[in-house]
Length: 400
Ligand code: GLA
Image 1 (tube, rainbow, N blue to C red):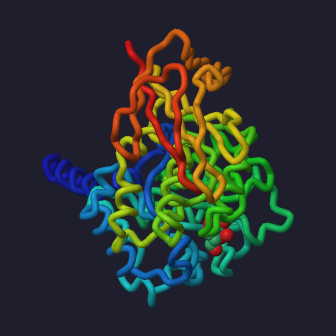
Image 2 (cartoon, rainbow, N blue to C red):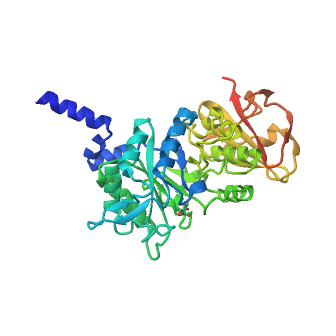
Image 3 (tube, rainbow, N blue to C red):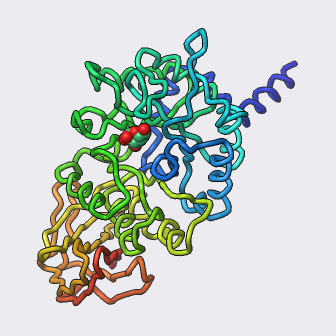
């Protein structure tokens, strides 16, 4: 008998069902281990909007494995809005059976069988932004349903929330997750309206800082500018979220490269928004660059800071674990720009991380992360040219 229960228990663990038996404290402990570095994955909204289906999600899961995305660290495959059916007689939310004939549990099982995780979308209001079933007043039932479905990640939006208190709403979902028996990453999507960076640490693992990104470089720059003053609020387990990526959705390769580099420098959650089943070589080359991803996933978890440059240019410096730095030079204009970098002017003493570049005393070797080439040392002056709407991205490797 004992042997049988051991076998049953082992089988349940393999199926990922052991989490359902966790008590509140265990779930809370596990929640604290999530997103120690910014979460990485994919989300259906930017490209597919309401055109989602079981076949699409399975195709994305397969592509994660075959394209190398999984090996590069992308883990979560997340459904956004428009997956919902109605609630049943008990108030439990159901899936749209036309789009997802095998149900959500089958999809999460499929993701898990490939070593991936599966995420879902809801909204703190009466209805989602696309007018599907919202979670207001049903948070405990919804978290329980997601736990039963084997969900690993919840994005919670903020439409149709008139008179709802944001802190209370998101805390309720957080508590509902604790009660559900299954740890789930909680991503707040409140667009920065109530300054979530001031109160959402400990409630969710990331919070949107702005409205929705659009598939153009002006939108990327606009969102970038709105990150000013927020770096002190982010860190392991609690990230500023400047919204999902538009890489591969139609911007130029230079723009895509700049967008991805900046999101890595900002420690943004890296949620792909393109059709990963059909990526061009250029798009794959950007999204799979492990040395660039490593800046985003650096264990120090400190966002880059901006150093003013010549008009139209910005210098972003990010301290890394072990004493290295990342340097991203952004050309905001459409024409190429040439500059002579003076390392002394770029010297930073970052109060937040207590890291200093000390270019006068420390020796750094420059690795260009997009060309892969070594470019000498960070000494005296360096002439650079940055194409329009593009970046130069370096890892400054400190000499021990
Ligand atoms: C809001 C969110 C988006 C997306 C849509 C779905 O606009 O900010 O990221 O989830 O809703 O309707």
